[in-house]
Length: 378
Ligand SMILES: [Zn+2]
Image 1 (cartoon, rainbow, N blue to C red):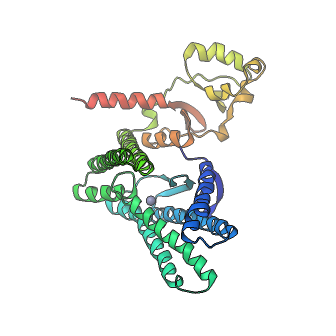
Image 2 (tube, helix red, strand yellow):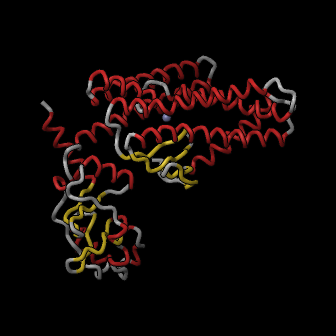
Image 3 (cartoon, rainbow, N blue to C red):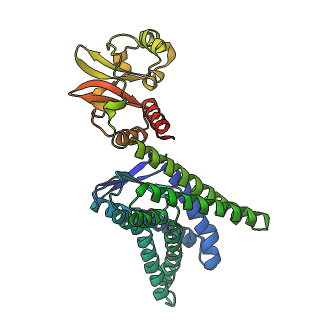
């Protein structure tokens, strides 16, 4: 969902990105600081000072969110989990990680690192505030004001993330503790997600109550957070259950083997009429002789305007094999599923010794999951 974004640099081999929604929220936060917060705490400040302090505070606030995410990632890296990117978006940050923690202890340390570092950072900022607050120098006063805000916001960030509902950090801590006690990851995830959903519903009920008893905006805001918590808990639980069902099975078990190979020099028009409409398939390896040159999918065809399909060759519309994301026949299906969703694609070719031997589409995975669930029912 929040995978795109503007790259802003790299730290510890992890690429850091700003999601486009971030710019909007940056302006909003800066505005709220310069027009509402600082005018109420420091009414004597000039407009330029309020705006300047607003911009600096806003940048440091997002730096704090980044610090929180980085701390999760550094612990994860030490535990052998790869982190590809951290994207800051309007609600915080998301780390894109490959793999899950292997033990309850790993999960506990990784989850606790974020809120812990936010609380420490918040404590540091508040410390600066108390040190400089009574100073008579104006610069010290400004730094104190900025530190006070950052201290409070970092502590709120730490506390919010400690709410014990999966997939929040606190929910992951809870899951690690249950996992450690019960040695059963699946039931630990189920319990931690249910607690998350319960807290979500509680927020919604309290939010609606507040909204109807005169505290309209805070009530709506709380209900929205509750709704976000509830849906995040149930969707990440479903996601985990699916991965669990797929784990231990390989791409070669579900791939469609009867791939129709098409030559590169037919036109898109021919491809549609002779292959796609009659077979209902969505993806075709392109090969001349024994050599696979690329892959042509429904999305690559849709990119060609309909009046150009008669003269466009498959070769010019296909994705060259060097740029196609592929998997080996032995790839675990849970990884295949993650590859599909991370790259936002509907199918991935299975390649063995430079040849496309099959294709795994989302449909193949869904059929596999349905059949397996059907068989497990009693
Ligand atoms: Zn976190």
